[in-house]
Image (spheres, helix red, strand yellow):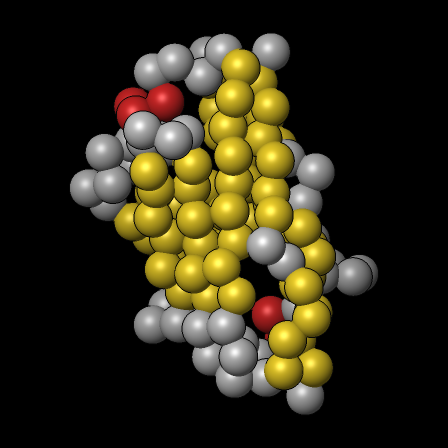
Length: 118
């Protein structure tokens, strides 16, 4: 069993910052070898990929819409992945999820709501 728990969402004004956390537990070993993705889903829209990070943090990727504003990182010793979000815009409003794939099975957290007011 694998559990992912996101936290850190909230209400913030445009231009503000939030740091999301994703705590992984269960059958995730070796966590340090597993890429993790952050996704988001806004009301009435499809879920979209926001950022990814490889197990050793050697490679990160970002959606064009968040490049230069969001930073993904991880602490393998704590089984944690983070998403630092700066210069937030109203269009960043969504539920944010983390995702991990283990032995061809994908696992998702329950999501954390981010609301950016204009």
